[in-house]
Length: 344
Image (spheres, rainbow, N blue to C red):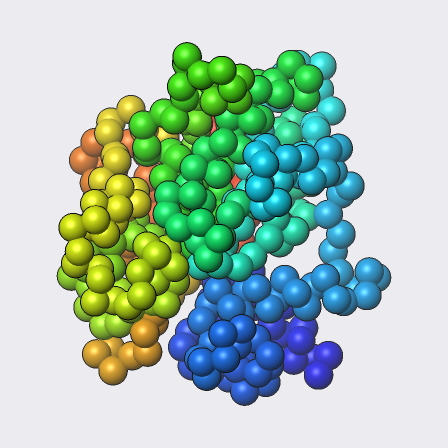
């Protein structure tokens, strides 16, 4: 069991689970099937990995440095909290924000990679890791708005926490990637006339990182792009607060789906993005399971094509390039490079 658990913990951070591997993991770890539907989704496997990491003895797992500020509320909801690690610097520091994945229904800020925090602090970059409301608690756009408010909150703490408000980036996997890119491309959420000092701050990013991110959250557009059954991912039901996929064509859902899809917000003044994918870069099977292929590289190809046309830096990497497991290291260094560059 220890060997199998070590395999799970080592494999999951790289987003390298094929459908076959997920089936094997389900047989070995049936408790990972959170919704008990007999199918193991990547988000469930990640959430199970996080749970197992927490339960491992302290001397068997990598420990994140102690936050300078822990469980600070950036909003009133119990999930609107963040941890902050302050870099040692006499000058205001950039900040990199980790936004966890989990299909918008699972995951935690505790899933952050300790090595990424250490690398950022060594480069003079402060770090934050946030929770946000699950769509089972508040549907779209709540997770994205929470991500935006966390960024605004950090900017409101610029003087107190020695933050450079002009240099803030965000990254994450899956749902966390989607929130990061949504903030990178969406119009600024700032409300200059608000009585809330946090709302007066900008939500815009300097750069963003995406691990297996989706450039569209429109199930019908995903069906057109990918075929197969990725568009039937169960996370879309609570995301849009519908009862079944039959409601995806309703006008009110179509409007939400357009706004949720990051590719629809791209303009030439948006932040650069680093994308990393692991799923097989091949057509999806017509007999696949619902949700299979939801991290397909085509999401990255389509996004990069549009970003290239607008003259926005878009770096695409795939595990097959031979950079795995250093793909995450490359992303970290790319984010550090952008955050330490002179503010524009």
